[in-house]
Length: 449
Image (tube, rainbow, N blue to C red; front, side, top):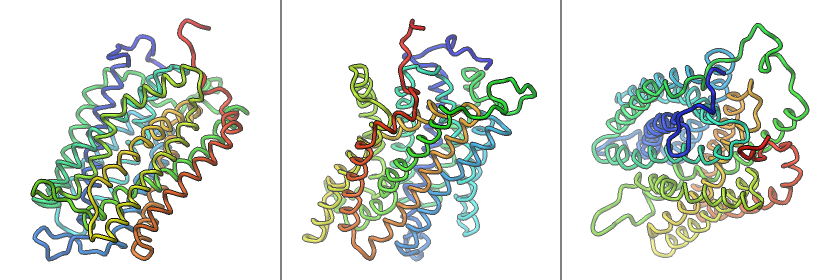
């Protein structure tokens, strides 16, 4: 690698390149979550409305939403392969960003063909950009650097600054001015992210460059079969993907069922003004921005005191905490059944617990993949991680759609019970799972050899 990780300029204790990737991802997520905040609402709005939508049923909308969000992340597998075998991570991020700008811009056109074409281009663009920019974050740190998890949390905060701003701005523009103006605004956000990435190349020298092909078979990354340790680590990574599927299968009710619940069954009046339903999509991001560093600091201090701090442990705890958020949604459904509407604070409490669970699980999972994946499969394994996220998104759509027959209270209660039980099972088998990592998460103390 042309870049010496020890010589990188630092800012606030981390490589400057982290902040280039932070702002690139911030604007990319502004575009994605802005569009996500209004997508289901646009699809279900009646065609004769003053701000007309597609007029689909809730079940049809959630089915498309689940398929779309699943494909967005499943495309990370070919996106990772393209990076590993052809382009490298850096060029894949650049190409993905260009495709995303085009996709969001086309969504601004008020034609059926533009709707499906735009979604298709966004799926392809995110597939190229998302796994590779995350892998580049891992490339900024040496193996065993204790700052890696914290670096991913900082990066994760960037994601959610974009999500917070977009849910408010794009959500407001889409709901009150016009859906397609909202889609267009999301495209402008992606263009800003692309410009940041191009400008910051001087801080990413040697990070994410193509290393797949090499004429010298003695090179570490070329043609060598996986060792026993690498195979064990790959196995535990694939097992961890099951945790990811469960987590996002529950969590992604936010953009689907909980989004519709906020729109149709929640009393959103505040001091005589009705809060836009899409604004609730910003609550999760707000809590991540305000709580992210505190929770990262808690886990860092926890591990430094010699307590159990493995990624798998944090992910299981995160699933359990997130599951408790659905207990509040059950209470919201009970209140709706008895009074005809439910209070906004139930949604806020649910998103608070979802956020704490997410901060325990999601940035840690990203870091976990970069610790365990063999170098030559780094982007592919990150792609597989996001594909697992995609499967979780599709399951979320299926579960959410079932509420039309089973009722919201039954769905929220079922998700609560399942996630808590699942998390406890993972904690029960933690030791044998940790053995498969072969010390990949052991800290390297500076100054030791």
